[in-house]
Image (cartoon, rainbow, N blue to C red):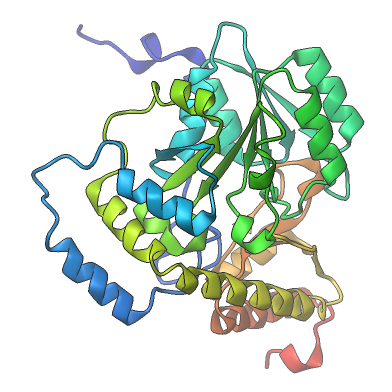
Length: 370
């Protein structure tokens, strides 16, 4: 049709939202995306490269990814009584879950601030999205959550554990109250579980409405995009109907199988990141004008005197972080900083010192620039 415009066809709610923006990190120390900063060992990389030569690129991948699921069960100690659903990252699994539950008038409920794509996927699927704000200390008030659940009767409750972007684990009392009160599916998103060392996987048998969602991205395999959901077989059976055929490609399956067979490599890297996190929190605590909040993830939420100015100053000095100021009331003047390698963390601290010096704020003498 001549002169047809997208706004004549695209749904109004899609036109009103913005696409997810990924900052360019070219030439910068990349501390904005919660990636594992450590590469795989050279010997393992060489082994994977040799194996890739045998992939039949003209054939579809194993639709059920049977071998990969076996590797995941062994590495992650997933009981045989629960089923596994694989996705192109945990993002695709979120879309599958939300689309499968998108009855007319259905609601998705989540704490706020949280992972921004919870809201995006809900709106795209045509569901109502309800947010329950966390407290000033980033905790979750069980009474507020229960009241919201009783009022809105959500089909899906999404809870990041630890939470993104605040980095904290919600209390056991709050989580239990939600699981016992929710009339629908409760998705516990454990993207950062390797750094929290706390999980609801062992509680799947206690709650028939619980689904545990995870990803290998934060563990060190962000480039191959593999997520997995664990739930009772009756849930996985229905969700699998929404999954696209061959959604996990052959290269992802092969690489994940090989790395999971060497799972100790990822475990050692996660332990190093946890140690680096503790060191970085302590070093940031030396800046009088900076608050680094406790974290159970591989990133830190940091409050600074002027987030926009500090963000821009860090970027000019070659360090990319995430500016969260304006995203939520509890995130006022906050940056989110991924835990990097010790060298990257030193570059961050030096750049931050320079930014604070520019503002005339107090800076530890050992980090003063000039």
